[in-house]
Length: 217
Ligand code: GRF
Image (cartoon, rainbow, N blue to C red; front, side, top):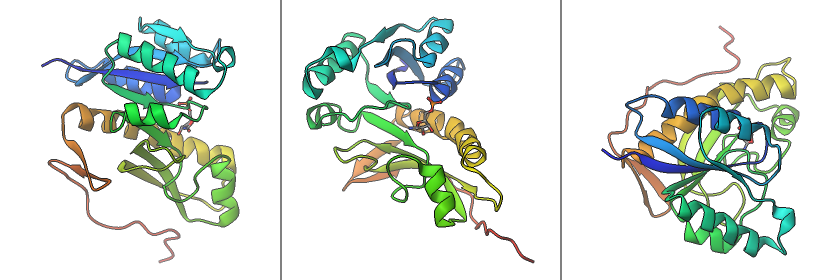
């Protein structure tokens, strides 16, 4: 069967991109990366794509007069590469409503918190300041409001008493690298459907049980 063609948008490090590259290297994995776009010259993730012989392009938002023409250039590049699913992976630009509409239910994002808690930035600092006992990551379809949209998959990690933001970020990131490839796989296998703004997954499986933090017994 033909593999789902994925476009990945990045601005920096690209460790989630790497997780997708690694997943796509598996023969049985049902998706392939057709194009990586960065909005920043020299974004570290570009080298990761190049090392895997994936086409890359830089579309610098600073070269455009406003959000719409920039987003139009993104869309054109994605369409020219026959991209069917767009993955935001540390892409630090807000996308226009037009772009989000054009790619509706074909545009996903990964966010390092358990949405709808802790939208925005400086997430791990805020989770620790709040005293939350759990955090995690969310892969969701993108809607015009930031960090909002039907949730595909979440992974949960405990927040430990002496965590600092970097330690917590690393714990969450390890789960991001599992969750993003899984979400893309589910979509590529046509097991993900959006109904009434909720995601329904075909052949859904989840381990039962609860985690408790602290576990005081
Ligand atoms: C990740 O934490 C992701 O959840 C957020 O931005 C970060 C990107 O990291 N949206 P990387 O570039 O994938 O390493």
